[in-house]
Image (cartoon, protein in one colour):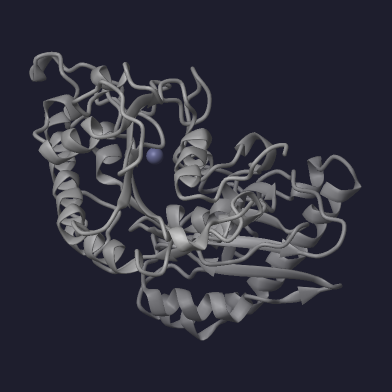
Amino acid sequence: MGKNSASNKKCIMLISDGLGDRPIEEMGYKTPLEYANHPTLDMLAASGMTGLVHPYKAGTRCGTDWGHICLFGYDPEKYYTGRGSVEAYSAGMTLQDGDVAFRGNLGTVDENYVVVDRRAGRIKEKEDIDQLVAAVNGIEIEGYQLLVTSLTEHRLAVVVRGAGLGGSISDVDPGTACEGMKIVDPKEDAVGDDNYKTAEMLWKLLHKAYEIWKDHPVNQKRVAEGKLPANFILTRGSGKAMVLPPFTSMYKGAKVAVLAGDETITGIGRMCGFDGYSKETFTGGFDTDYQGKAELAQELLENYDLVIVHVKGTDLCGHDNLPFKKAEIVEKIDTMFAYWLEQNKDRDIYYGMIADHSTPCCRRDHSADPVPVFLTGKDVRKDDVTVYGERACSKGILNQYTGATFMATIMDYLWFSKKYGA
Ligand SMILES: [Zn+2]
């Protein structure tokens, strides 16, 4: 049974990256979420269901990519192949089954392939990068193709496409602070025919790119300006293409938009078949355009069943041990929900909030602590929780849910759930 189209139900779900925290002495042993003043979030929590949710599984610690794959309704264990694929999608590439993806750097090597600088002097001139990438993107040898897209600064997403490739080869990049060492031939320790094929073709393609780049006008200009030439792609983190079944294979007909300043999030969204939206003012930092995000989400609500809004600042505060700033960002999120409530006061919209993992300030890294969530709407079941915080949500009815089952719950309220049996 698919969607009852007459119902026209819609939801805004906000993901506050790394929101969950631990008690902080300077906050009177409250968490930043408990310390912050957020009357709208409290009201939303009080009017619906809450809980402490495990983004993946109880006791596991998620990275942002893994956590979001969970929140989007998938089991990453079945699909996750590494960071290379995530970066390729983040760069706007679409991978095919059988592709092998890598993370890459624009680097500088000398004529003996000794690494002079792993980041080509931290190259950041966008025009230079675009011209160099365009000169090698799509080159082919023996039916194998090299696809290259630039990310920020010296970072690249790199894909080798062709038949019979394996996803597990060692890094060409000799590694952090290894300037003065030669690039590493991954054929040397490739195991199995498929991995050897990948190593062989990558090595040939990278050398062909070097031939194109070593005397390229952009590099001649850079050298004349006293800058390091960007003449080699240093790859690391190989992995087979991550190809997720479309979200609509689980929730037929569902239209989902994801708004983020962080390319990783829109990239993972695209992997699921969501439409990704960003603006220059969405920085993926502390100073993102909260109101701009709220307004764009409101506009997108007309064309989508589910609008997912990502806020990164809470995670950054956890990593930087800035609990009071984390509380301030929660207050900004509160005003986003207040805006949506005002805009939709004559409509029945569902509102949800979750995090991809906890990033406790005291730890300055992700932890396995479950994350506080709420889901509310006119016909949503209520629990007795009246406040949105880690402690309060521990008494909610969504307790022990996972990220994927939280998504399933939202999709059930939106009438996209499959019925099992007759
Ligand atoms: Zn995260």
